[in-house]
Amino acid sequence: MSVDSAPPAASAAGAAAVAPHYDFQDAQSGDLGALAAIADAMKSDSLADRLESLKRLGVLALAMGEERTREELVPFLDESIDDEDELLLSLAEVLGDFVQYVGGPKYAYVLLRPLENLAAAEETVVREKAVESINKLVEVMDQPQVEEFLIPTIARLSSGEWFTSRSSAAGLYAAAYGKVTDAIQAKLRAGYDALCKDETPMIRRAAAANLEGLVARIEKDHVVSFAIPNFRRLAGDDQDSVRLLTVEPLVAITKRLDTDECRQLLGESVQRLCVDKSWRVRYMVADHFVAVATNVKDRGLQDELFGVAIALMHDNEAEVRGAICTQLDGLADLAPPDAIVARLQGPLQELVDDPSQHVRATLAKHIGALCRVFGKDGSITHLLPLLLRLLKDSFPDVRLNIISKLDAVDRVVGIDSLSQSLLPAIVELAEDKQWRVRLAIIDYVPLIASQLGVHFFDEQLSNLCMSWLGDPVFSIREAATTNLKKLTDVFGVDWARATIIPKILAMATHPNYLYRMTTIFAITTIAPSVTPEIVRDLILPALEGLVTDPIPNIRFNVAKSMEPLTAALRRSPETAPLEGSVIRPTLARLEEDSDPDVRFFAHRSLLAIGSA
Image (cartoon, rainbow, N blue to C red; front, side, top):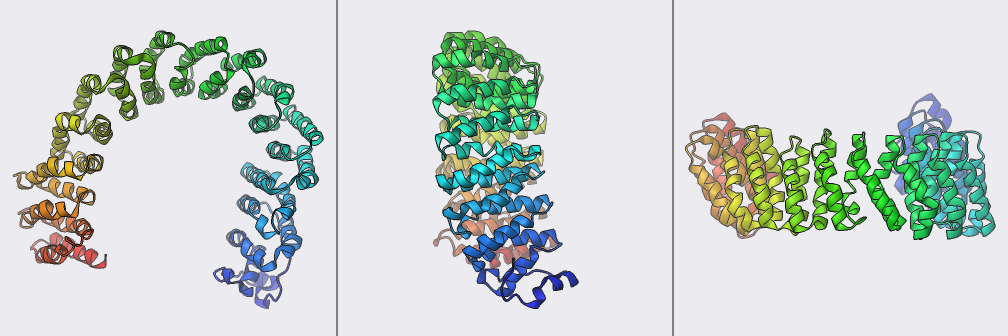
């Protein structure tokens, strides 16, 4: 490949003599020197330069024109493929979006050859990206192109000596299947059948992983005659890494079959997968359990599968127990409500006390969905005690997940029952002697408030939130100020003005300087969430009283707070003049303070305000 009129300095000989620095900045303008730099950088010894040249490949292609790009640039790229995985990955990605540079969809096939070579690369991510790019090309290719160019590509990859090419081939069958004649479709099925029987586990893995996409495209008759036999073969493979990949194709197959076909053709295979000796296979089954059980449609088989789900809740592996917990909502639809309540009570009791904190956290996230099946009375009797135990769990994610899903419980049992049962536990945790526990509860309060409503919050939790502002631990006080801002966002500015801002400002005259300090932190934090008028009428007067506070830490925090307050005042033309009449004079006074820290922060705030 060459670039016309390339200057001598950019020649290969010059590049060999002195390792050049390639400047790509002018490439957009089509400058010939910059284009030559791109071309030479593609041959550079520097990986960084070669990667940069690939990013600019479109510029070079535009300058060369469509015909020369097809005849020179694409073959050059194919011949220049080296063993740098990062470069190969970038090239595979670039070629997938290169159709516009080779003349549009009717010439998309010219990109198949370099991508075919990349699909046989040793590095997995390179092969996957090459397959992805080929599938993008197939979307714009018409039937004659697919049959003339893509099908031979698939055939070569499928018969490749090394497993790399055959594993990539498995990812191309689905995209090609819908764009060829019936005769070629038969050949494709035969080719895929060979991959499913390949002696190399990696190939069978690829065949299992891509069977789902093919199932969605083949005709119903071939689902029975082709997909199900291959699914059974792969589901019975001696490698668990192959068997675990058959669960998603199973879901796709069940969608294509009716009730009787599911029972007759898949019942035994489904049962065998559910009790597989490998925990990784059982995990995949548990993770897709509802999709499988729902699609099989047969009520008798679903009832059997519900029993399997109960068994998975007692599995020896925590990952399996956690995965089946994610399916609780869907499980509730697989049996009559009375049966659900009766059969789940025992397993749920055990899962609440599971030794794995991951399992308990997953259970906490999904157990609330069962309330709709248990009903109000059943939820109050059976589920609320479990929620209460989870709310007291030592692992913070368990408590968070319970609180984050309270709305599902609230819709069924009502706010009165919920507050009576769980609020005492929340209050108890909020006053825990371990400050980290208190900190965790603070993070949950805005979520609780949004779900329980403003009236309930004002009655039950408002005083608790204000008490955190006086906590002896700084992290608690800091989190409490952030909490107030979030509450303001939840309940609105009018609520904040009437409820929390007066309580915050009342602390400005507290004899303990920590309370006065917290006042500054709190109003600085909530300032972006309130109106400029509130800053003018309530916040600024309170801060002016702290300018002469005897504690230097108070005074320099007043200086620091002026910057966010100025930003808030500037949001309204009515309050913006206060910057000149109040903010700047206040900072000027603090610049003359006797304490050097106060002077420093006052000066810094003035500079920040001036540059904003």
